[in-house]
Amino acid sequence: MNRTDIAIVGGGIVGLATAYQLSQRFPDLVVTVLEKESKLAEHQTGHNSGVLHSGIYYKPGSLKAINCRDGKKAMEAFCAAENIPYEICGKVIVATREAELPALERIFERGQANGVACEMIGPDRLHELEPHVAGIRAIHVPEAGIVNYRRVCERLAEIVQERNGRVLTGAKVEHIHRSNGHLVISSHTGEIETRYLVNCAGLQSDRITALSGEHPSVKIIPFRGEYYEVKHQAQHLCRNLIYPVPDPNFPFLGVHFTRMITGGVECGPNAVLAFAREGYTKKDVNLRDLAETLGYSGFRTIAAKYWKTGLGEMWRSFSKSAFVKALQRLVPEIEEDDLEPAPAGIRAQAVAPDGTIIDDFLIQETERIVNVCNAPSPAATASLNIGRLIVDKLATRF
Ligand SMILES: Cc1cc2nc3c(=O)[nH]c(=O)nc-3n(C[C@H](O)[C@H](O)[C@H](O)COP(=O)(O)OP(=O)(O)OC[C@H]3O[C@@H](n4cnc5c(N)ncnc54)[C@H](O)[C@@H]3O)c2cc1C
Image (cartoon, rainbow, N blue to C red; front, side, top):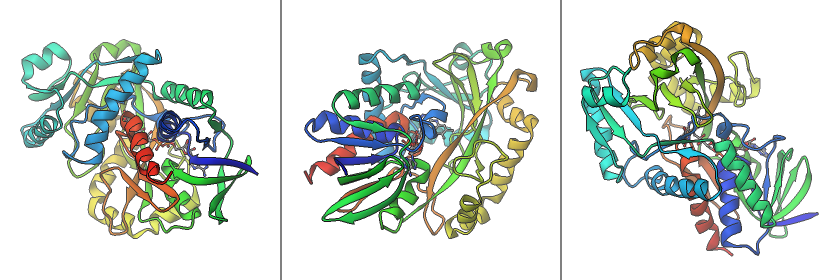
């Protein structure tokens, strides 16, 4: 049987960043990443907006705030050292109505508390930065940026392998059991015995927790985020990153315009309940996933509380013109004809049995296992620091 010191389930950015940090700090330990897909970063990491978040939104002192601030610096340093293109292009968070001003003010205060360089600006300065945006006030965040997280993952995996780590694709983990004080993981590539396990399985993280014999304290509810790509003719309408003021009741940031590091401009994502954890179109239904979601007390509580918002999001999902209307609040000149559908992403959002939407990152540990139970946005930005945090937790046991 193959042996390893630490097995990491999940070849998304959190799993790979953890493997990278482990191989850096403990070069004598063998690290093995097990990824079920034939390629790395095929789920959340490969379907996101590609934004390097500044940390402006998050509650001061939270894991999101701390790890986003430090993780962004680490990500920029990594990209610079490894010649991965990234750009600090800046972003604006735009209030279009008086009613949004108190929420905008609260974000600004959080930004200042988190040490984010940001400035409250009026319509004239907004016009200089983004001439096609209509807003009555905005926050300018010069330090926000863009990057391609798939590229980051490819390089992380190469470095882990250069340091004698293993990155196995096509290795779906199906069973985990204990034997002689070790864990034995059965995957599509065979059995592997490990001293420690790190669960970075994103949309499947609660199921990996259950496979390891623990009762997950939260369940993953999948929310699909649909995007449109802005056609060439209208790309001049967005210079960099244009965000609305988010609804403070939800963990999502609202449909935004994002210039991508690979070229072009995307807008989205909305947030609709996905009927399959890894189904990227409206037609994808996985009966097991759907039954688990609908049968979960936490989901039913959310549905009862937020059904109106949920219906609005679903309406925008089915009606392009409704989606465009949301975008026109930020950029009035954008038209339906300027947009074509782009691939969607699915967010893994952890929800507690009482319906609490887990806002912060959530990492739980047992004697031999570290479970990353909730790693939503900005976990890609923060990944190198989340990896460091996990290594700190494991280091006390080596
Ligand atoms: C639409 C969208 C937009 C976003 N925008 C941003 C952004 O702009 N900036 C930002 O910082 N963050 C953003 N995020 C969040 C960010 O993408 C995620 O927080 C991050 O990618 C999470 O990484 P992960 O490694 O935990 O999960 P994933 O990337 O989902 O990786 C988990 C991996 O585990 C594997 N896996 C699952 N089960 C098994 C199994 N049984 N055996 C083996 N492998 C398994 C999966 O195949 C997958 O590759 C966005 C997310 C979405 C969905």
